[in-house]
Amino acid sequence: MAIRIQHSTRPRILDASYLRLLWPIKRSQRRHATSFTSPSTQRWSQPPTSANIADDEVARLAAKPLHALTLADLVRHGRPPLSASALFSSANFTLSLLPIRLAHRLQSLRNLPYIVVSNPHISRIYNNYLHSLSTLLPYTERQINNLEDEIKFTEVMADLVQTHSNTIPVLARGFLECRKYISPIEVTRFLDEHLRARIGTRLIAEQHIALHFSSQPHNNGDSSHIIDDHSSYIGVIDTALRPASIIRNCESFVSEICELKYGVRPTVVINGQPETTFAHIPVHLEYIITELLKNAFRATVESRKEKEPIEVTIAATPEDLKQDNDISPLEQGDVHHIPGEETDTKISGTQRSSSGTDSKIPHSPHQNPSIPGCTIRFRDKGGGISPSTLPNIWSYSFTTFNDEDLPSSPNTSSTPTNSTNGNIDALNMISGAAGGQASSLAGLGYGLPLGRAYAEYFGGGIQLQSLWGWGTDVYLRLRGVGAVG
Image (tube, rainbow, N blue to C red; front, side, top):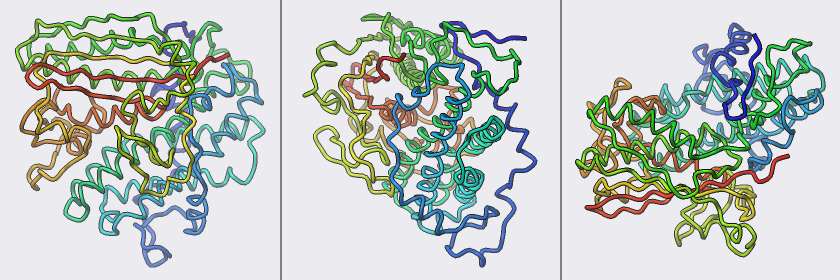
Protein backbone atom coordinates (compact mmCIF):
# COMPACT_ATOMS: atom_id res chain seq x y z
CA MET A 1 0.00 0.00 0.00
CA ALA A 2 1.44 3.36 -1.02
CA ILE A 3 2.18 5.94 1.62
CA ARG A 4 1.28 9.46 0.56
CA ILE A 5 2.51 12.46 2.50
CA GLN A 6 0.26 15.47 2.70
CA HIS A 7 1.54 19.04 2.87
CA SER A 8 0.66 19.51 6.53
CA THR A 9 1.30 15.96 7.70
CA ARG A 10 4.59 14.83 9.14
CA PRO A 11 6.13 12.09 6.99
CA ARG A 12 6.26 8.67 8.57
CA ILE A 13 9.77 7.98 7.38
CA LEU A 14 11.27 8.10 10.87
CA ASP A 15 8.55 6.16 12.68
CA ALA A 16 9.73 3.19 14.71
CA SER A 17 8.23 0.84 12.16
CA TYR A 18 10.55 2.21 9.50
CA LEU A 19 13.64 1.99 11.66
CA ARG A 20 12.74 -1.64 12.37
CA LEU A 21 12.99 -2.28 8.64
CA LEU A 22 16.70 -1.65 8.97
CA TRP A 23 17.50 -2.48 12.59
CA PRO A 24 16.93 -6.30 12.47
CA ILE A 25 19.21 -6.65 9.45
CA LYS A 26 22.30 -6.03 11.55
CA ARG A 27 20.97 -7.04 14.93
CA SER A 28 22.38 -10.54 14.83
CA GLN A 29 25.77 -9.21 13.78
CA ARG A 30 25.98 -6.49 16.41
CA ARG A 31 28.79 -6.79 18.93
CA HIS A 32 27.15 -6.15 22.27
CA ALA A 33 28.95 -4.28 25.01
CA THR A 34 28.42 -7.25 27.32
CA SER A 35 31.09 -9.28 25.48
CA PHE A 36 34.22 -8.15 27.28
CA THR A 37 37.87 -8.62 26.50
CA SER A 38 40.54 -8.60 29.12
CA PRO A 39 41.33 -5.12 30.46
CA SER A 40 45.00 -6.01 30.31
CA THR A 41 44.86 -5.90 26.52
CA GLN A 42 43.83 -2.24 26.53
CA ARG A 43 46.52 0.40 26.14
CA TRP A 44 44.33 2.99 27.81
CA SER A 45 42.61 2.11 31.09
CA GLN A 46 39.14 2.06 29.57
CA PRO A 47 36.13 -0.10 30.41
CA PRO A 48 36.36 -3.57 28.82
CA THR A 49 34.91 -3.70 25.33
CA SER A 50 34.74 -5.99 22.31
CA ALA A 51 35.13 -3.16 19.79
CA ASN A 52 38.55 -3.35 18.12
CA ILE A 53 39.65 0.27 17.68
CA ALA A 54 43.17 1.49 18.33
CA ASP A 55 43.49 4.25 20.91
CA ASP A 56 45.60 6.21 18.42
CA GLU A 57 42.73 6.13 15.92
CA VAL A 58 40.29 7.58 18.45
CA ALA A 59 42.82 10.27 19.40
CA ARG A 60 43.47 11.10 15.73
CA LEU A 61 39.77 11.60 14.99
CA ALA A 62 39.15 13.49 18.23
CA ALA A 63 41.93 15.93 17.31
CA LYS A 64 40.01 17.01 14.21
CA PRO A 65 37.73 20.04 14.51
CA LEU A 66 33.98 19.53 14.57
CA HIS A 67 31.83 20.87 11.77
CA ALA A 68 29.34 23.43 13.09
CA LEU A 69 26.10 21.82 11.94
CA THR A 70 23.40 24.12 10.58
CA LEU A 71 19.89 23.53 9.32
CA ALA A 72 21.18 24.57 5.89
CA ASP A 73 23.55 21.58 5.98
CA LEU A 74 20.60 19.26 6.43
CA VAL A 75 18.70 20.58 3.39
CA ARG A 76 21.71 21.03 1.12
CA HIS A 77 20.93 17.92 -0.94
CA GLY A 78 17.54 19.21 -2.08
CA ARG A 79 13.96 18.05 -1.79
CA PRO A 80 13.18 14.33 -1.97
CA PRO A 81 12.90 12.12 -3.83
CA LEU A 82 16.64 12.47 -4.35
CA SER A 83 18.52 11.17 -7.36
CA ALA A 84 21.09 8.45 -6.83
CA SER A 85 23.95 10.95 -6.97
CA ALA A 86 22.29 13.23 -4.42
CA LEU A 87 21.64 10.27 -2.13
CA PHE A 88 25.31 9.26 -2.38
CA SER A 89 26.29 12.85 -1.61
CA SER A 90 24.11 12.77 1.51
CA ALA A 91 25.69 9.51 2.64
CA ASN A 92 29.24 10.80 2.13
CA PHE A 93 28.45 14.07 3.90
CA THR A 94 27.06 12.09 6.82
CA LEU A 95 30.13 9.86 6.83
CA SER A 96 32.45 12.88 6.86
CA LEU A 97 30.91 14.12 10.12
CA LEU A 98 29.91 11.21 12.33
CA PRO A 99 33.24 9.43 13.03
CA ILE A 100 34.76 12.70 14.27
CA ARG A 101 31.73 13.42 16.44
CA LEU A 102 31.78 9.95 17.97
CA ALA A 103 35.51 10.23 18.66
CA HIS A 104 34.98 13.55 20.44
CA ARG A 105 32.36 11.91 22.67
CA LEU A 106 34.73 9.05 23.45
CA GLN A 107 37.50 11.49 24.31
CA SER A 108 35.12 13.42 26.56
CA LEU A 109 34.22 10.22 28.41
CA ARG A 110 37.90 9.32 28.73
CA ASN A 111 38.51 12.65 30.43
CA LEU A 112 36.20 11.64 33.30
CA PRO A 113 37.74 10.11 36.43
CA TYR A 114 38.30 6.40 35.85
CA ILE A 115 36.13 5.46 38.83
CA VAL A 116 33.27 7.32 37.16
CA VAL A 117 33.69 5.90 33.66
CA SER A 118 33.95 2.42 35.23
CA ASN A 119 30.39 2.71 36.48
CA PRO A 120 28.28 0.09 34.62
CA HIS A 121 25.91 2.70 33.15
CA ILE A 122 28.62 5.08 31.97
CA SER A 123 30.76 2.17 30.80
CA ARG A 124 27.80 0.97 28.75
CA ILE A 125 27.58 4.33 26.98
CA TYR A 126 31.33 4.35 26.38
CA ASN A 127 31.15 0.92 24.77
CA ASN A 128 28.13 1.96 22.69
CA TYR A 129 30.16 4.81 21.21
CA LEU A 130 33.06 2.46 20.51
CA HIS A 131 30.67 0.03 18.82
CA SER A 132 29.18 2.76 16.63
CA LEU A 133 32.58 4.11 15.66
CA SER A 134 33.82 0.62 14.80
CA THR A 135 30.89 0.13 12.40
CA LEU A 136 31.61 3.45 10.66
CA LEU A 137 35.38 3.22 10.26
CA PRO A 138 35.33 0.70 7.37
CA TYR A 139 33.34 3.21 5.30
CA THR A 140 35.86 6.03 5.85
CA GLU A 141 38.33 4.27 3.57
CA ARG A 142 36.19 4.76 0.46
CA GLN A 143 33.46 6.89 -1.09
CA ILE A 144 29.89 5.63 -1.19
CA ASN A 145 29.07 5.63 -4.90
CA ASN A 146 26.69 2.72 -5.44
CA LEU A 147 23.28 1.73 -4.14
CA GLU A 148 24.49 -1.41 -2.38
CA ASP A 149 26.95 0.54 -0.22
CA GLU A 150 24.36 3.26 0.42
CA ILE A 151 21.81 0.74 1.67
CA LYS A 152 24.37 -0.94 3.95
CA PHE A 153 25.46 2.46 5.24
CA THR A 154 21.84 3.37 6.03
CA GLU A 155 21.60 0.12 8.01
CA VAL A 156 24.57 1.33 10.05
CA MET A 157 22.80 4.65 10.63
CA ALA A 158 19.71 2.85 11.90
CA ASP A 159 21.91 0.81 14.22
CA LEU A 160 23.52 4.00 15.52
CA VAL A 161 20.19 5.71 16.20
CA GLN A 162 18.85 2.64 18.00
CA THR A 163 22.02 2.10 20.03
CA HIS A 164 22.09 5.65 21.37
CA SER A 165 18.36 6.14 21.93
CA ASN A 166 18.71 6.23 25.75
CA THR A 167 22.17 7.74 26.13
CA ILE A 168 21.21 10.72 28.31
CA PRO A 169 19.05 8.86 30.89
CA VAL A 170 21.63 6.08 31.21
CA LEU A 171 24.41 8.62 31.75
CA ALA A 172 22.27 10.46 34.29
CA ARG A 173 21.72 7.27 36.23
CA GLY A 174 25.44 6.57 36.20
CA PHE A 175 26.25 10.04 37.50
CA LEU A 176 23.70 9.63 40.28
CA GLU A 177 25.54 6.53 41.44
CA CYS A 178 28.93 8.29 41.17
CA ARG A 179 27.94 11.58 42.76
CA LYS A 180 30.50 11.06 45.55
CA TYR A 181 33.34 11.08 43.01
CA ILE A 182 32.45 13.99 40.73
CA SER A 183 31.18 17.48 41.53
CA PRO A 184 27.72 18.72 40.50
CA ILE A 185 29.32 21.45 38.40
CA GLU A 186 31.30 18.87 36.42
CA VAL A 187 28.19 16.76 35.93
CA THR A 188 26.15 19.72 34.71
CA ARG A 189 28.90 20.74 32.29
CA PHE A 190 29.35 17.21 30.97
CA LEU A 191 25.64 16.46 30.51
CA ASP A 192 24.95 19.81 28.90
CA GLU A 193 27.83 19.34 26.46
CA HIS A 194 26.95 15.71 25.80
CA LEU A 195 23.29 16.45 25.16
CA ARG A 196 24.08 19.20 22.67
CA ALA A 197 26.60 17.03 20.85
CA ARG A 198 24.07 14.19 20.77
CA ILE A 199 21.45 16.46 19.17
CA GLY A 200 23.71 17.07 16.19
CA THR A 201 24.90 13.48 15.87
CA ARG A 202 21.38 12.08 15.96
CA LEU A 203 20.10 14.69 13.51
CA ILE A 204 22.81 13.89 10.98
CA ALA A 205 22.01 10.17 11.10
CA GLU A 206 18.22 10.60 11.10
CA GLN A 207 18.32 13.05 8.21
CA HIS A 208 20.08 10.55 5.96
CA ILE A 209 17.72 7.76 7.02
CA ALA A 210 14.78 10.03 6.18
CA LEU A 211 16.21 10.96 2.79
CA HIS A 212 16.94 7.30 2.09
CA PHE A 213 13.34 6.26 2.70
CA SER A 214 11.87 9.20 0.81
CA SER A 215 13.99 8.61 -2.30
CA GLN A 216 13.43 6.15 -5.11
CA PRO A 217 16.75 4.84 -6.50
CA HIS A 218 17.14 1.94 -4.09
CA ASN A 219 13.54 0.73 -4.48
CA ASN A 220 13.98 -0.68 -8.00
CA GLY A 221 10.63 0.59 -9.14
CA ASP A 222 8.85 -0.25 -5.89
CA SER A 223 6.28 2.49 -5.23
CA SER A 224 5.73 1.65 -1.58
CA HIS A 225 7.28 4.98 -0.59
CA ILE A 226 5.58 7.67 -2.63
CA ILE A 227 6.40 11.25 -1.74
CA ASP A 228 3.82 13.94 -2.34
CA ASP A 229 5.24 16.66 -4.58
CA HIS A 230 3.56 19.21 -2.30
CA SER A 231 5.17 17.94 0.90
CA SER A 232 6.94 20.65 2.88
CA TYR A 233 9.39 18.14 4.38
CA ILE A 234 13.04 17.64 3.54
CA GLY A 235 13.96 14.65 5.67
CA VAL A 236 13.19 15.54 9.28
CA ILE A 237 12.87 19.29 8.54
CA ASP A 238 9.52 20.94 7.85
CA THR A 239 10.26 23.90 5.59
CA ALA A 240 6.81 25.37 6.28
CA LEU A 241 6.52 24.66 9.99
CA ARG A 242 3.60 26.47 11.64
CA PRO A 243 4.25 26.89 15.39
CA ALA A 244 0.58 27.54 16.15
CA SER A 245 -0.35 24.05 14.94
CA ILE A 246 2.31 22.41 17.10
CA ILE A 247 1.20 24.47 20.11
CA ARG A 248 -2.36 23.19 19.70
CA ASN A 249 -1.19 19.58 19.39
CA CYS A 250 0.96 19.90 22.50
CA GLU A 251 -1.86 21.66 24.34
CA SER A 252 -4.18 18.73 23.67
CA PHE A 253 -1.62 16.26 25.00
CA VAL A 254 -0.74 18.25 28.13
CA SER A 255 -4.41 19.04 28.82
CA GLU A 256 -5.26 15.35 28.98
CA ILE A 257 -2.43 14.71 31.43
CA CYS A 258 -3.49 17.68 33.54
CA GLU A 259 -7.14 16.65 33.67
CA LEU A 260 -6.19 13.08 34.54
CA LYS A 261 -4.03 14.25 37.47
CA TYR A 262 -5.94 17.28 38.74
CA GLY A 263 -9.44 16.95 37.31
CA VAL A 264 -9.22 20.32 35.55
CA ARG A 265 -7.49 21.75 32.50
CA PRO A 266 -6.59 25.41 31.93
CA THR A 267 -7.23 26.92 28.51
CA VAL A 268 -4.60 28.19 26.10
CA VAL A 269 -5.10 31.36 24.08
CA ILE A 270 -2.87 31.89 21.03
CA ASN A 271 -2.47 35.45 19.77
CA GLY A 272 0.05 37.58 17.90
CA GLN A 273 0.89 36.16 14.46
CA PRO A 274 -0.44 32.58 14.50
CA GLU A 275 0.02 32.17 10.71
CA THR A 276 3.82 32.46 11.00
CA THR A 277 5.77 29.69 9.23
CA PHE A 278 9.47 28.96 8.90
CA ALA A 279 11.83 26.00 8.40
CA HIS A 280 12.66 24.00 11.53
CA ILE A 281 12.54 20.53 13.09
CA PRO A 282 9.05 19.67 14.41
CA VAL A 283 10.24 17.00 16.85
CA HIS A 284 12.47 19.51 18.64
CA LEU A 285 9.77 22.14 18.81
CA GLU A 286 7.23 19.63 20.10
CA TYR A 287 9.50 18.64 22.95
CA ILE A 288 10.25 22.24 23.95
CA ILE A 289 6.64 23.40 23.81
CA THR A 290 5.35 20.35 25.67
CA GLU A 291 7.76 21.00 28.54
CA LEU A 292 6.93 24.71 28.71
CA LEU A 293 3.20 24.02 28.69
CA LYS A 294 3.60 21.39 31.42
CA ASN A 295 5.28 24.00 33.59
CA ALA A 296 2.56 26.55 32.91
CA PHE A 297 -0.32 24.10 33.40
CA ARG A 298 0.92 22.74 36.69
CA ALA A 299 1.78 26.16 38.11
CA THR A 300 -1.63 27.49 37.08
CA VAL A 301 -3.60 24.59 38.59
CA GLU A 302 -1.63 24.34 41.83
CA SER A 303 -2.05 28.07 42.44
CA ARG A 304 -5.83 27.59 41.96
CA LYS A 305 -5.86 29.86 38.92
CA GLU A 306 -7.16 27.25 36.46
CA LYS A 307 -9.80 29.70 35.19
CA GLU A 308 -7.04 32.06 34.07
CA PRO A 309 -5.97 31.24 30.47
CA ILE A 310 -2.36 30.55 29.57
CA GLU A 311 -1.46 33.11 26.93
CA VAL A 312 0.83 32.14 24.05
CA THR A 313 1.98 34.94 21.76
CA ILE A 314 3.74 34.25 18.45
CA ALA A 315 5.85 37.00 16.89
CA ALA A 316 7.71 36.57 13.60
CA THR A 317 11.21 38.02 13.34
CA PRO A 318 10.78 41.64 12.14
CA GLU A 319 12.01 42.46 8.64
CA ASP A 320 14.21 45.29 9.90
CA LEU A 321 15.98 42.89 12.27
CA LYS A 322 16.65 40.47 9.41
CA GLN A 323 18.31 43.25 7.42
CA ASP A 324 20.34 44.74 10.28
CA ASN A 325 23.68 42.98 10.18
CA ASP A 326 24.93 45.04 13.11
CA ILE A 327 22.57 43.31 15.54
CA SER A 328 23.91 40.07 16.91
CA PRO A 329 21.38 37.39 17.78
CA LEU A 330 23.25 37.01 21.04
CA GLU A 331 22.07 40.50 21.99
CA GLN A 332 18.45 39.57 21.42
CA GLY A 333 18.20 36.96 24.16
CA ASP A 334 19.83 34.48 26.44
CA VAL A 335 21.73 32.30 23.98
CA HIS A 336 24.16 30.06 25.81
CA HIS A 337 27.35 28.44 24.68
CA ILE A 338 27.08 25.38 22.46
CA PRO A 339 30.01 23.18 23.43
CA GLY A 340 31.77 21.81 20.43
CA GLU A 341 30.18 24.33 18.08
CA GLU A 342 31.61 27.66 19.24
CA THR A 343 34.59 28.88 21.18
CA ASP A 344 33.20 31.81 23.09
CA THR A 345 29.68 33.18 23.46
CA LYS A 346 28.12 36.00 25.45
CA ILE A 347 25.72 34.91 28.15
CA SER A 348 23.57 37.64 29.65
CA GLY A 349 26.47 40.03 30.03
CA THR A 350 29.04 37.40 31.03
CA GLN A 351 31.42 35.21 29.09
CA ARG A 352 31.54 31.44 29.10
CA SER A 353 34.20 29.35 27.37
CA SER A 354 34.22 25.70 26.49
CA SER A 355 36.15 23.44 28.78
CA GLY A 356 35.97 20.21 26.80
CA THR A 357 37.68 18.78 23.79
CA ASP A 358 35.10 20.17 21.38
CA SER A 359 36.06 23.87 21.57
CA LYS A 360 38.02 23.89 18.31
CA ILE A 361 35.52 25.59 16.03
CA PRO A 362 35.26 29.32 15.41
CA HIS A 363 32.07 31.31 15.92
CA SER A 364 29.06 29.31 14.78
CA PRO A 365 27.37 30.17 11.46
CA HIS A 366 24.05 29.53 13.24
CA GLN A 367 24.20 33.07 14.55
CA ASN A 368 23.01 34.88 11.43
CA PRO A 369 20.58 37.80 11.88
CA SER A 370 19.30 37.39 8.31
CA ILE A 371 17.80 33.97 9.04
CA PRO A 372 14.02 34.16 9.62
CA GLY A 373 12.42 32.76 12.73
CA CYS A 374 10.04 33.69 15.49
CA THR A 375 9.70 34.30 19.21
CA ILE A 376 6.98 32.61 21.25
CA ARG A 377 5.99 33.91 24.69
CA PHE A 378 4.29 31.62 27.21
CA ARG A 379 2.58 33.61 29.98
CA ASP A 380 0.91 32.08 33.03
CA LYS A 381 -0.43 33.44 36.30
CA GLY A 382 0.73 30.51 38.37
CA GLY A 383 2.55 32.44 41.07
CA GLY A 384 6.01 32.62 39.55
CA ILE A 385 9.21 30.93 40.71
CA SER A 386 10.59 31.51 44.19
CA PRO A 387 13.87 33.46 44.42
CA SER A 388 15.50 30.49 46.16
CA THR A 389 14.62 28.14 43.28
CA LEU A 390 15.25 30.51 40.37
CA PRO A 391 19.08 30.22 40.28
CA ASN A 392 18.88 26.43 39.95
CA ILE A 393 16.33 25.96 37.18
CA TRP A 394 18.98 25.37 34.48
CA SER A 395 21.05 22.90 36.48
CA TYR A 396 21.33 19.10 36.45
CA SER A 397 22.07 19.27 40.18
CA PHE A 398 21.97 16.16 42.33
CA THR A 399 23.53 17.14 45.66
CA THR A 400 20.26 16.78 47.62
CA PHE A 401 20.07 13.00 47.18
CA ASN A 402 20.61 10.26 49.69
CA ASP A 403 21.10 6.67 48.55
CA GLU A 404 17.49 5.81 49.31
CA ASP A 405 16.35 8.68 47.09
CA LEU A 406 17.64 7.09 43.90
CA PRO A 407 14.79 6.45 41.45
CA SER A 408 13.88 2.89 40.70
CA SER A 409 11.12 3.34 38.14
CA PRO A 410 9.84 5.78 35.52
CA ASN A 411 7.13 6.78 37.97
CA THR A 412 9.53 8.71 40.16
CA SER A 413 7.97 12.03 41.02
CA SER A 414 9.49 15.40 41.79
CA THR A 415 8.60 18.87 42.79
CA PRO A 416 8.03 21.41 40.04
CA THR A 417 10.18 24.32 39.06
CA ASN A 418 7.66 26.65 40.70
CA SER A 419 7.92 24.84 44.04
CA THR A 420 9.93 26.05 47.00
CA ASN A 421 11.27 22.67 48.10
CA GLY A 422 13.15 21.10 45.21
CA ASN A 423 14.16 17.71 46.61
CA ILE A 424 13.96 15.92 43.27
CA ASP A 425 16.04 17.51 40.56
CA ALA A 426 16.77 17.34 36.86
CA LEU A 427 19.32 14.54 36.94
CA ASN A 428 16.98 12.30 38.92
CA MET A 429 14.11 12.89 36.53
CA ILE A 430 16.21 12.22 33.45
CA SER A 431 17.46 8.91 34.80
CA GLY A 432 14.13 7.84 36.30
CA ALA A 433 11.85 8.80 33.45
CA ALA A 434 14.09 7.63 30.59
CA GLY A 435 14.79 11.22 29.70
CA GLY A 436 11.77 11.86 27.55
CA GLN A 437 8.61 10.19 28.77
CA ALA A 438 6.09 12.97 29.24
CA SER A 439 3.57 10.79 31.05
CA SER A 440 2.94 13.07 34.00
CA LEU A 441 3.21 16.67 35.09
CA ALA A 442 5.77 15.81 37.74
CA GLY A 443 9.46 16.53 37.39
CA LEU A 444 9.11 19.76 35.47
CA GLY A 445 12.58 20.95 36.43
CA TYR A 446 14.45 18.81 33.91
CA GLY A 447 12.40 20.08 30.97
CA LEU A 448 13.96 23.54 31.08
CA PRO A 449 17.65 22.62 30.65
CA LEU A 450 16.84 20.01 28.02
CA GLY A 451 14.44 22.31 26.19
CA ARG A 452 16.98 25.12 26.25
CA ALA A 453 19.59 22.85 24.69
CA TYR A 454 17.26 22.03 21.79
CA ALA A 455 16.37 25.71 21.31
CA GLU A 456 19.96 26.92 21.41
CA TYR A 457 21.42 24.31 19.10
CA PHE A 458 20.42 26.20 15.96
CA GLY A 459 20.87 29.70 17.37
CA GLY A 460 17.66 30.14 19.35
CA GLY A 461 17.24 30.35 23.10
CA ILE A 462 14.95 30.44 26.09
CA GLN A 463 14.58 33.35 28.51
CA LEU A 464 12.50 33.25 31.65
CA GLN A 465 11.03 36.17 33.57
CA SER A 466 9.42 35.34 36.92
CA LEU A 467 7.22 37.71 38.91
CA TRP A 468 7.20 35.95 42.27
CA GLY A 469 3.67 35.88 43.63
CA TRP A 470 2.06 36.51 40.25
CA GLY A 471 3.27 34.44 37.31
CA THR A 472 5.96 33.59 34.77
CA ASP A 473 6.78 34.65 31.22
CA VAL A 474 8.94 32.31 29.14
CA TYR A 475 10.34 33.52 25.81
CA LEU A 476 11.24 30.85 23.28
CA ARG A 477 13.29 32.21 20.40
CA LEU A 478 13.72 30.07 17.28
CA ARG A 479 15.76 30.54 14.13
CA GLY A 480 15.02 28.76 10.89
CA VAL A 481 17.04 27.82 7.86
CA GLY A 482 16.03 30.68 5.56
CA ALA A 483 14.69 30.24 2.04
CA VAL A 484 14.67 26.64 0.84
CA GLY A 485 14.34 25.86 -2.84
